[in-house]
Image 1: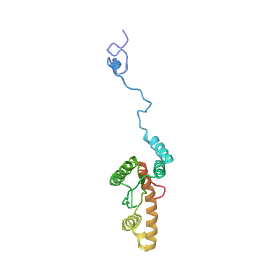
Image 2 (image 1 turned 180 degrees about the horizontal axis):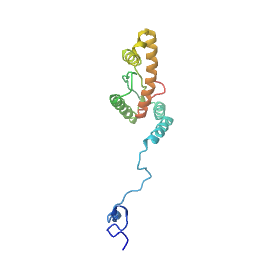
Image 3 (image 1 turned 30 degrees about the horizontal axis):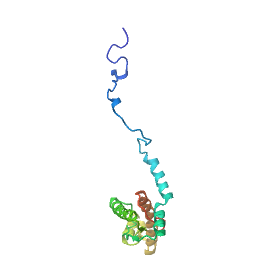
Image 4 (image 1 turned 180 degrees about the vertical axis):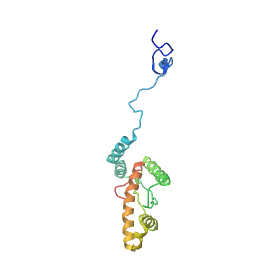
Length: 174
């Protein structure tokens, strides 16, 4: 007698796949959306689309041409002394919600992001990144130059992050 003799009928694992009797009763919609987000590929594409679309510029121009009432949000700027954290995200997104609400009410929203690019927090961050030997011969002028360079890089990084969050504003002219 060959054939393996057991229930499995020669299938791997010895189990026979049973047909699901309910499969024909489940009606799922068909969609072109992928089952996977593929964020590594899609996010840069979406960011490029929204940057080229210039939503803030289009909305501002249309509201200005219509003579709409102006709304200006005065935003206390973050220090340019490091990476953003969840508090920065919450702060900016709540303000973005306010701006978008004003846009939906037909107002001309003026939002220009800014940064606090001087002072002790930035100087301390620069000093923390230096070895003690580097700090010994450091003059106040050199420290300020290093702080300005650090702040500029941080502003660019933070600006990119805020735009990735979807915050709309005049990021080209901070």
